[in-house]
Length: 146
Image (cartoon, rainbow, N blue to C red; front, side):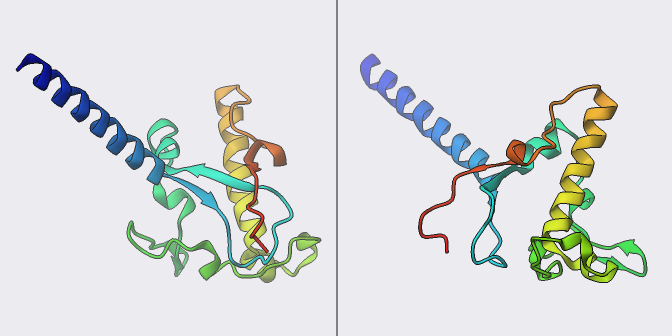
């Protein structure tokens, strides 16, 4: 009887670990926009949970939908960046007109992410948040990515 109880606890422990690990992985996404047929840099792995729990970043700090100058985005609303930021230029994007720059997906990511990382590093006197290309762009692309 004791052996059966031990086996059941081991199996429950393994199952619990698998479920917890699975849930944690769902919070980690690979940023891979369909706006680009071919990526010029490795993809970026982003952990929502770490940014929310560990760094205190509010969802609206990144996700936004502006109406009359106010961010009206709420949890559960559309989260596809390229739904609005659909200007695809990746080279010389800073030479675009200001309205086009606001719609440029690369600039939207870079301005938001790098700006926040620099602020975090400065306020915390650290270099923990990556600010270089290779610091964020770490995920090798699959060969079938065109």
